[in-house]
Structures are given as C-alpha cells and as structure tokens.
Length: 158
Image (tube, rainbow, N blue to C red; front, side, top):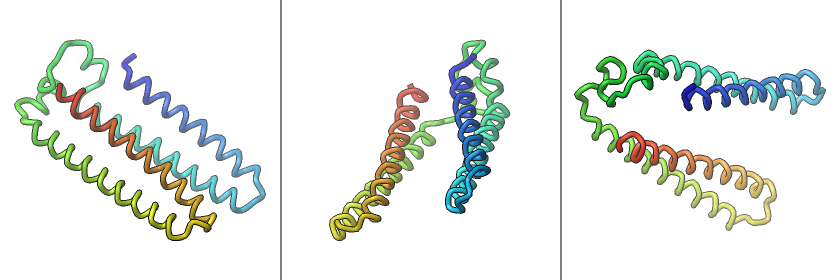
C-alpha cells in the first residue's frame, strides 16, 4: 500500500475517532457551552473528512490511482495520461514559492501584531491566553509552509 494512502487512512481514522468522542461529549453533557463547542468540532471534522475524500477523488481523476502510477516507472509528464505532458512547470513552482513567501510574510505581520498587543497590555489574562493559542496556530502554519516549500522544491522539482 502506498505511503500517501496509509497517511490518508490514518488521518481519516483520527478524524473519525475525534468525531465520535465529540458526539459522545455532546450527547452526555448538560452544559450548553460544552455542547456548542462539541457541535463546532463535529462540523469541522465532517468538513475535514469531506475535503480529504474529495481531494483524493480529484487527484485520482486527474492522475489515476496511485497504485497504477507507482506500478511502472514514469516521468511527471507521463502521469495522468498526458495531463502534464510537455508542460513547463517552472512557472507553477515559482508561483507556489511566491505564494508561500507571501503567506509567511502575513504570518510574520500577525506575530508582530500579537507581540505588540502583549507588550501594550501585559496584565490582561484573557489576551495572554488568546495570544498563546494564536502563536500555537501560527507555529503550525509555519510548519505547514516549511513542509510545502520542501515538497515543492526538493521532492517535486528534483
């Protein structure tokens, strides 16, 4: 079984387990705040599962099943029955790199704004908590940008 399929099924399994835990939490909780948070997480999980399945279907429609593509040695132009044949992909990779750089710049600006807010009002506990969660999500975003950069520049191009 190809690596991408294994990762996809693991992610779908984790999302499904989280979905079931939130459903149980929503059913058993009497607190309205807990049930509303659980409901929001349930919707997010369902959207995530749908996005993964739709993306898999679209990729298989364009490139073919991964098992078929990996069965025979191919070049990037051969994948998908000529969809990418004779395509000059350097412009695509340049655009992707510019977009990744722009997103990294936006994240840097968000970090500066969050730091400024913390310096202006260091005693506000709610602001500190909000800033910590924002910085956590920012670090996740930076990790995703770095991973995308590595994938585009070292795995796909070379």
